[in-house]
Amino acid sequence: MSSARPSSSLVKAPRPWGFAAIALFLPLIREDVDITFSQAGTLAAANTLVYALMQIPAGYLADRLGPKRLFIVGLLGTNA
Image (cartoon, rainbow, N blue to C red; front, side, top):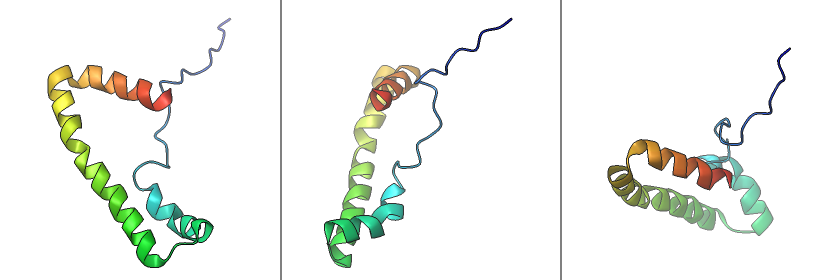
C-alpha cells in the first residue's frame, strides 16, 4: 500500500495571471476602476516597462548566485 502525499506548494503549474494577464483583465480593470482607454494603455505599458527593467537585476542575480539557487529563491518568493 502506498500512501498518497499532497503535492508540494513549490511544484505548481505556471499561474495564468502572470505577466500577460494585464491584457486579459484590462477591460475588467478599466470598468472597475473607471479609467479611460488611454489610462488603461498607460497601465499596460507601465507593467511591460517594469517587467523589462527587472530583467537587468534578475540577470545580475543569476550570474552572481547561479541559476539553480535563483530558481529556488524565485519559487519560494512566489509561493510564500
